[in-house]
Every structure is written in structure tokens, then in C-alpha cells.
Image (cartoon, rainbow, N blue to C red; front, side):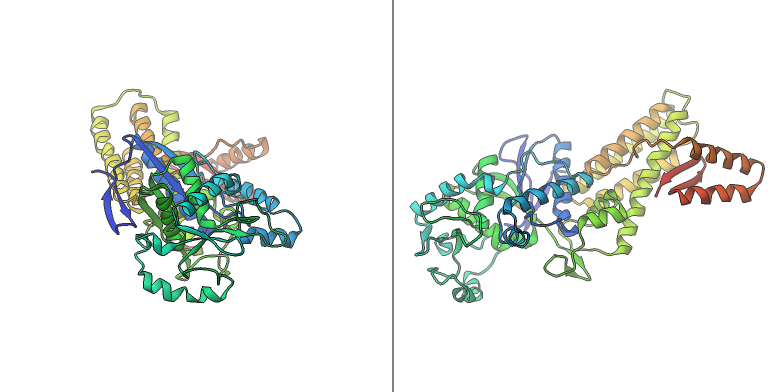
Length: 471
């Protein structure tokens, strides 16, 4: 089965054919760094990081670009509140965002460009749009894009221009009276007191939001790219305006495929800081664990709305722990396995197990269906749990481990716990408990279990022996 992507531009699933065989160019709109990211911000990060991993699994060389918007009204507002430069705010929260991404096992992009470092390219593109008649300069130095001149305006959002015209008339009385048409949008705007600014031929000012991504995508990926992705709230006006600017300036298609993830909701309402219902990602990570958060985000198809709740997060945590426990059992059996070579029965079982990789690929080939892909991983976990035993060979156990690691790594799930060292006192208590159980002194054994629990250590009695984990 070939990889198919639901293309927002055509509203249909299409077979993915890259511009250049074996290589994929992806641009994903990143966060505006004015505060800690909220949990809704992590959905596109995790989804498209997983998609990137899958493309690499299929053998593609992926150039993955995701920006940081580091000049914005919200950044400026926070800087004024704190009495610092806007750059102080953007740097601080860029670093905090990177920490959260690392915790969630979101790999760094090939390039993470910053809007403020690309001003020269923005000025050049605006000059080109002015020369081609797609832009004009208002009396106060604001540069606007003539949306109606771009004949395909609205092709991504599938919006009717007349409806847009009516819906945007209110803009004519909100400080943008110099527009020729209410559909027109800002490419460059004059500075206000206390704002960062750059010199331009039109005024001292700063770029509009939309021109930033068009320029950064062009610089690091070229004039035409394979995939542009982001949240569905960016379809209009941001991505629509990116298309208009880029295609008007460059004279060629901007992106062949457009992928958009649905909202993360709370009580069926979009999660956002402005709605007052957005939990900081860091708080959720601390409460449930970063891998549980990642598992949760992949538990539904990326184009389906996903409701956030404590109950669903606990379910995700438990689901993730099932995979981890299966891997722990595999490692335990591997450590004690005496036989090296596969038996005839194990050879047959491995042929069955290999089918799970094919089924996983089928799910991911169907528009990055991570929900079905996770289901396949759980089926593999069940297979591992039921088909392995004390007598299993190292070759058999090792092959199953590699398969499980392959699929979980594509999903970005870390399923092998880092080695931890218990201090001597705790080790002695665990050994004493084992002795108490052999002597049927269950009261002492229970007391030791409770003492360890108070230290944040949970003991689990399994068929492979006593295991422990920190909570």
C-alpha cells in the first residue's frame, strides 16, 4: 500500500508523491513564544514529529523545518508588562518550549528558524510583491497585499470571497481604513511606541505574521515544498495568506500537500489560553508523565477532535505502562535465557510476528492513522506476553524486542526505562521482604512494602520475580 495523505487543498486523500524521489520537504508552523506552551500546542508537535519518523522509516530523507514566531503583539505586550525587551521574552520561552519538546521526545527540526532573523528576506519578498502589483503602500507606511488580485485566493479554506468580504467589513473601522479592500492583509506595519522595529523603504516597523512563514519556508526548503502542516485553526487566514504571498511572489505552487490536525478540546470546546481552559503542557507532563502525554496525543486520528480529561489521561498512562511492562518482561527473559538458537516453533511464531510490522505500516500509510497503529502495537504486546516463556531462546526474544522497539520508536514512545540504582538500605529491605515471605511472615512483608511505598517505590510481584518502580 502506498502512503496516502488527506490534502486540505483538495479535500481528498491523495497518494503521496514527493517533488524529488527519496526526499521530503516539510514546513510545520511552530509556536509563538510569549509564554509556556499549553497542552493543545503539543498536539501538532507530536503528530507531525511522528509522521516525520514514519517517513524516515520508509526510507525518505526528510528536511523538516518548524519556526519560532519571536515577534508578535503578545510577546510585545508581555515585554511591556515586565519592563524588558521583547527579545528577553521570546528567548526565555523559546528555551522553555524546547525543554517541553525534549521531555515529550519531539526531535529537533532540521532547522528552527526565528522570524526576527529573516527580516531581510521578508523585505525582499514584499518588494517583489509591490513590483508585481500584488501589494501597495498606504499613507502611514503600512504595506498591504491585494488579496482579490490573487485569483486563487480562498482555494485552501474553500471560502467564498463575497462571504469573506461581508465578514471583514468591520475591519474598515478598526484602524485599517487605508485598505483598498477589506480582504487585504498586512505585509508590513509601522512601529508603535515601545515596540521593536526594523528599517524598511516604507517605514520603521515590523512584518505581518503571514509573510514570516512564507519567507522562512522559501529560504530553508525552496520555493515549492512537499508538505505544509499545522493546526486547523491556521487554515484561514494564515495558511491561505501564505499561499497567496508565496505563489504571487514566486510564480509557482507553494505546497503540494496540506495537513492539518484537529483541535484538542476540553468539554468539546477548543483548548486555548484565550478561552481560559488551557493547561500548561509542563503541568500535565509532571502529573501524568511525558510519555503518557505523547501516547494520548496519538490515540486518536490527527484529523479527529480529541477531548482532554483526567480520565482519558489516566487511560493513556495505563496503556503506555502496558507496553513498558511487556518490554520489561522481555528484557527479564532475555537476561536469563539459556538457549541461543531459534526452535522450529519459534521460527513459525516469528513469521506471525512479522505481520504486525506490515499492519502497522498499513495504518500509517492511511493518512498517518496513529490510533490504528497503536492498536497494532497492543496486538504485538499481547503476542509477546502469550508466546514468550522461560524456555524461549535469545534469538526469539531478541527478534520480538527489536520489532516492538521499531514500532514504538516510530511513535516516539520510550518503552525501556532508564536503569536506576537503589541504595543499599532499599536493597536490603527488598531482600528482607523476600525472606519474610518465604517464612510466611506476611505481616512483616506487608510492612516492608508499605515502608518502601512511603519512599516512593512500588513493588510488583510477577511470575519473573519482584520488580519495582518509582512513583
